[in-house]
Image 1 (tube, rainbow, N blue to C red):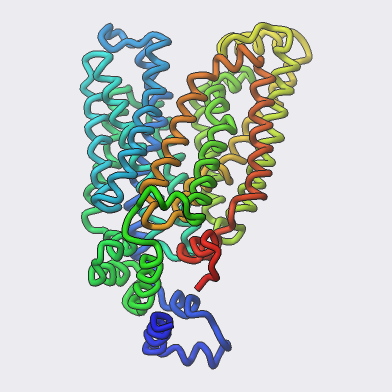
Image 2 (cartoon, rainbow, N blue to C red):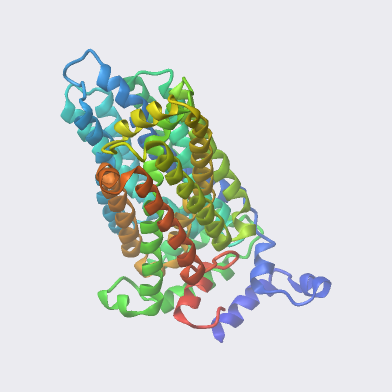
Length: 503
């Protein structure tokens, strides 16, 4: 084919004969990647993940702030339990809306400008919370930061997947979740020293750095080529790949894929296998991520530390955050070696077992008590733990929680977001990613708000056995339907869904 001949000519012009004589026949892709320098790519990724870091600060902010707001002497901003629940959960509603907005923005103004835009509601939201004089200012501030979180959770994975090459895309994509949990942990740590107003001010620093840093970063080459801006795309690639890489070759490869995919999203595209198959996989990945019960585990984490006679509950929360950071970091380091499917399966099995053991713990310690709320559960466990040999079962709860959180961080935390950014064709990426983000955040809100009802309906043990069953289904779903994307270009991944041989 003419375009393939042109791509080979571009590589030959860079002097690739030495590779073929020394090592034998090698793929065009390997020859090209050997010439790539990653320094500025790492810089662009670092700047972009200031968005997920901000997102993590939003999620972590409520844990130290809510106790302060419940006990504050200022009647204007004091929260009762119901108001505190809305203060924590309104973020998920804002994020669901932000996911839809992000899907529209990435197609209209591009990935780079969308990232810069999402910094604004982060900064304004935390500024409103810092200056809050009544409850509505607190709610508006949280809703704005939730909106920004939704946009960020869509745009950053797309931006990274489109600037990173296949040798490092897994590691770079995993940095999204790594920075989220780092932000959560950072909010926990800062919250032990700062009041809620000063903590909100501290949380506004990462998005401020994001909007400044992105001014010096490039737009993604794929978006530029989809807009017919080849010269700008080559400049962006030259920035990302270094001066020695023949970026015209990568431009030609991306252009060929763009020609196959069409100019924009149409409803009729949903009938194409290369669209509806990855869309179904992406939506189910997001559904199952929340159905694991991770929010329920995190919700009950402080009570577990209390039941295990760990006096400093704030320190216990920090330990949970550090556990997430550590295992997410391990996932990022091994992502491009182990592959996505292997880590998802290991993660799913670990969570299946630990959630089942959690259920056993609750069955043995609170099975004969009424289970109407987490607080009632906590007091029931405490009473039973203090009434004889059952106190020894506190270690079981701690071990189950540790294994569950480690398992989630190793696979089902980072990988759904990574796979979402890899499997969609460029022309439907905004729409499809928005549907996935809406699914994730909508499901998060439902599970968070219905958790108390699940406890009342199924008992504590039954609720965690339900989560264990969902984790087991996750493993089966991963084995049967989730494609392995390790080491493949975005074009090769989409060719697999299309049913055509990879170029």
